Image (cartoon, rainbow, N blue to C red):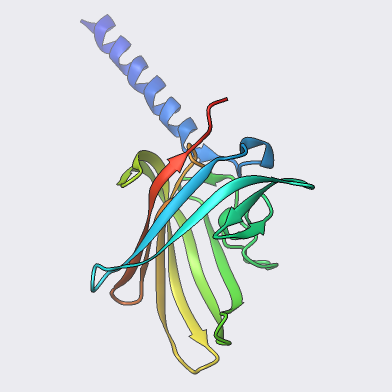
Length: 197
């Protein structure tokens, strides 16, 4: 009986160690991507439940090597806004490697195509490694919570909270919820395709 209990304890300990190991991931390198790899996201308004838009990202070959084509615009790999260099800042958007319990401060100055500029400041934390379901399927993902506020050149300001689920298997956020005192919108991965080797 004692031997059986001891075996169960050992197996439980090994499972816990294995799970802890799964709760750390590095930033994907350009070599991790393949030409033709494609992600499609959909954004839905939280109040009306209507689709606000879609975004498609595809890995393409350029003269300089592989790059992302995002809604027709070419960006470098890794994508700055996806993998940690949101803007040149001492307080970056994402700090790698991701690990449950990791915390940092994020701050960004930004501008929109309509001429409005602003500043966002948030406290970020990796709070869990969990399964999440989206239209593209089920994924094990890191849940990252950003809590803070924003202000704009138009004099508006307020609370801004963001929750992201980053799935290492697809090297991308599979879900993102924005709230400002109440839910504003949700973005989810609709499909992910990787060409056969």
